[in-house]
Length: 137
Image (cartoon, rainbow, N blue to C red; front, side):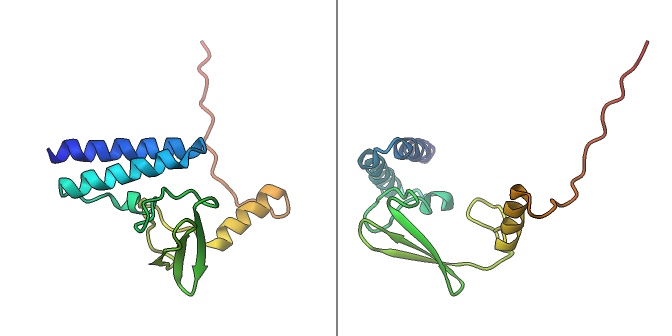
């Protein structure tokens, strides 16, 4: 029963993400409400990746710029819901892992990549793979 509930929650979050990309946020919000209800009924915790995608106050699916605003303030990442105004504060320290298991990227590294793409700074040396040798018969 728990396995089926988890599968349904995964499917609902995938549908919510798909609907949010097509500008239909009320349907995406409904999917989030349904996923949360299934989790509560069958006592299934939502994955940490999913908790970053919606507002706990009004169950709105968060789309950056449309329904949520993200700010970095004094060691915290503050995500404010633009529908109900609720804020979620998460500690933010360099070197820690992000919600998907990837390390947080330092702003200076991102800035260097942007400058390298613009042609202002030489890109760092990258390792290239040796070309395969062709056999001549």
